[in-house]
Image (cartoon, rainbow, N blue to C red):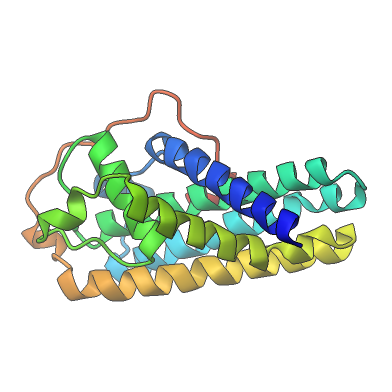
Length: 224
């Protein structure tokens, strides 16, 4: 038991590093792009669209790894579980970033700085307070990595059903991922509504930079 616990902590640390590396590669649509893609929608309707798309995408990730549960080789199962955790994290970080766009609360800074802010928001499951510089300048230090590891450990525990036979694991994994993504979105949106800037009061913002090598996400997240 002690050895397995140590292995889980090592895996969580490795996953934390992978997610930190992935964050700047998550492609984010800016408000202008979203309004063009979904014409005629107000902020809440547009946010609903984003949440629905992200929930479908995280469910797709959850359902897609079940085949590994049929394999008796633990490393294969761990690799698939790691792929799911990082895949869902990327989906949810994209959702977090685009919700900030919809509510008029894009954090200042360049791609790397905004990615850190969104990673913090995802890790802490709360919106970014753009009026507090300390929330925007969070370094990827010990405290944040510990919080990230805790978040990952909880997600790994939720994903244990994926390690039972394939059909059951896939169905449960998809349902749980969809539910958890919606819960995250609810928390973020509640925070953002308190600071929301109406679209007609927003200063014109430049288009968001595209990552040089964007991470590939399930097509469902586009919400079309």
